[in-house]
Image (tube, rainbow, N blue to C red; front, side, top):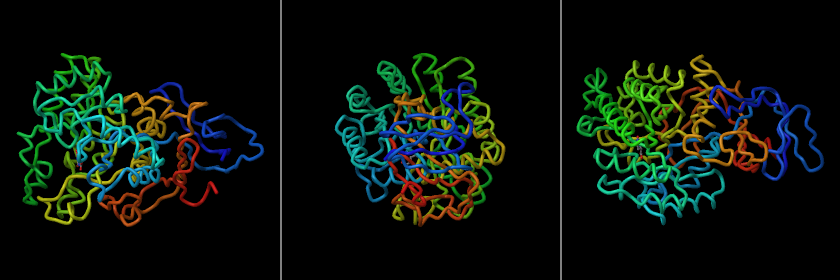
Length: 435
Ligand code: DOR
């Protein structure tokens, strides 16, 4: 079906602080591609026209950090249910982490992920390959064969690369293939099994804490290695004030260092763990208010390159247990857009910056190509339409994900996804807008 999307506020920010669109325009979709953007476009025979006055039209969102759990943990999520959750959240492209079973450390697993995502057909899925075989931190995985099969970066996410020598080789090897190296920054000797942020809340709750330095010391070490190797390095789910200072300084020195921040880290703090709600348990842990404020500052000043969810589905088996024993992780795909729009509502960032952080920013970082994250004419029509004035209440029982471990259950959030198109095909439609 061809569509003429009429009179939406169209925002597209393909360049940091540069070329952009932000005005009330029409967008024409033909044969799954963006055919034209302009005022008073003509539709014609067989074109379905949809009036979108007062609505926002954005490039489909891009999430560089999700756990789709397939292969191996399909009872929590699979590529199809994760893609459905993405579509409901306005996400049309996402990168999935390799901590599956088997681990994505070889061509066969990457092939499987790519094939399953195509079969589901609800989102573009770009696998991230493991840095080390089996995520064991001992020897490097085969970056080259995984890249041929479709990986766009490497990471041992869920586990840090503790060994500096291995990290050096990962950076050198990654550089040869043009693959960004993504670090789960957590020095295990400092984290010492801590289940919450070290501080007052941990002490009061009687829970073992881990200090913010467990993250920033790893980031500092890695930046030394980046300076040495010149390789592209990305900090996953950065959560502390010191990490922001280190990344900001590295960038000032022209190093190829980037970072992402997750919505739960810029929205919540460790206070949420006081009543032992395991949905608040995540790695890295929710931090202190001073860290949260530093993240907001870094999101606003350009230190942060993108918002990424760390969508980490878990079932009751992992979450309905004592806080100490619960698995780390939270759902994210279906709430990222609204939590980021909340930053606009709170005047932390402009709407344009919010769009950049969720679209072209991440797409550029991992070189996803094909116009992903932008509204380029002639490229596939990956689009999300949002009612910016609607508010909705998060309900864990209404999630498209197979899991329910959202920390935002019961919260009222701004911005409702009306529908999502992937290559011009409707992959989510809240109210049969596209019928
Ligand atoms: O909380 C987390 N959960 N952090 C990670 O880095 C991994 C993830 C998971 O796989 O559950």
